[in-house]
Image (cartoon, rainbow, N blue to C red; front, side):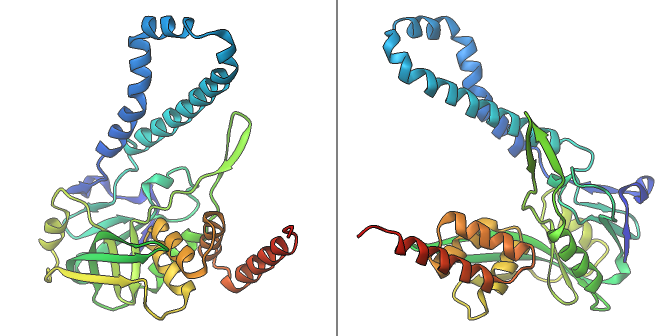
Length: 304
């Protein structure tokens, strides 16, 4: 295995490239663009209807209209960025060559991160002992019911059983601070929770399963094993920190939040804060103590 910078990929040797489909991004963009098109198309009707509204009513409707415009602008901006990302050259996951494959370890959604470290792994096919499809389900217990999420992975088993370097890279990437951006004078740090690859156990790498014959292309060079199903149970007895960390590593942030809320009866804000602590590699004990102190203080100041 070798870790490489994007410009070290031998493009002339690539036989097939597997990317994330832009269809979802285009559908989302169309969904948020449709209301704007409808308003422009029927502008005369909207203007006439607005003129019929008594001016005192605009004291209430005016702020609501401005809020709706602001929300629509934010949604359009976000969808434009998603579409832009989907069509970038960096939107690829696996490139196969005659002798091996390139794997993009960093999510294409985090293309705005600095390229100050290798982000691509190259594996010769003779390093791999087997490949197979894994169907992974997770039953998330919430306060009201149980929700089930399903993901498909392509499992790469390494002949030497050594994935320590990959595991270290993925752990460092998860803790890497997002770059700061400025929009309309506001500062923000954006990190998308998409994880294209995880190390579930020593000697094995899970790669996000894409369509387009990705599994079949790999099976042309590596022995293919039978498809297997894996079930992650929210009721297992491992420490909460380990279970949440596993979900975060897989990119299942919503399932991790649901688990945190169910286990510790947290608000959505506190659960999100707990997830960020796990992502940063911090202990949950300090977070639990702080939450208990805050709840105790709030109870003490509640009028009787």
